[in-house]
Length: 374
Image (cartoon, rainbow, N blue to C red):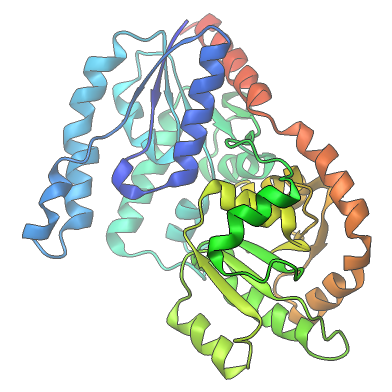
């Protein structure tokens, strides 16, 4: 079988989607599939410095005007074309006579454009673009969703029949596993952390859906009586926004909160391996990769009692309402003593999410598509 994987636009810097594509490429190749990868190339966008404020529009030229020609040239080689993320569904118009599949990672952009997510404001052109993505999904021959939650949301919004939708869980795109004490110490030495001090951890970026401001409020409650937890909070990912920095200062949390900007995968693995627990109070997710990354490293997980986080975390995580600060703090403080049991359960739960199992699911779906009458 020959499969053409259509990846995301590099200039969008969606690193998790790159991990998905690379993980799928490696596993499909190991299972005997001949695989090629193509993605929109950054061409027009390279001129954005000459035209201030033009970056988004030049990116649209690369994706909407220039890439379709490359795709039409490449797709003749393939038995099946796999659009590896849902925004690429805009290309299904060119694939109506070609067996193809789209992976839908989440419905957040589409839902925000429809006004279903008040935390996320979408401008006029963004709403137009999300409509085009939804139209492309509705044209798709088949769609694989990375969680049952994403599948349910897509079915509700699109009206597509269940027969055209499949759930295929993500695998771990990086080999997260417990890191030995000495190695984790060496990895984190350059970060200036007090390595002997247990700490709480968050991994993520500053999108409103990640609820990092909510996390800071939960942490403030944990530091106050009756809990008075002494553990620092390490927030790995992006630098703090001005709002976050102001909140830290105004509430006297400077000695407890630490931002680690842009850690690499091995540093993140070291953080997971040394953390007292991961706190992940996200409001919306398509899957929730940090949950299984942490569990794979033996790190206990506290996360939102919202799908798909409870779908992915299973019985191995402890859940709270991310909008109820005081209640969340109480649940976390009262459950930290059971961290050892949580770690063991997490290591078991994460066995459900391997790239081998993910690739097998896609290969079986490819075969069904190729065998179905067109």
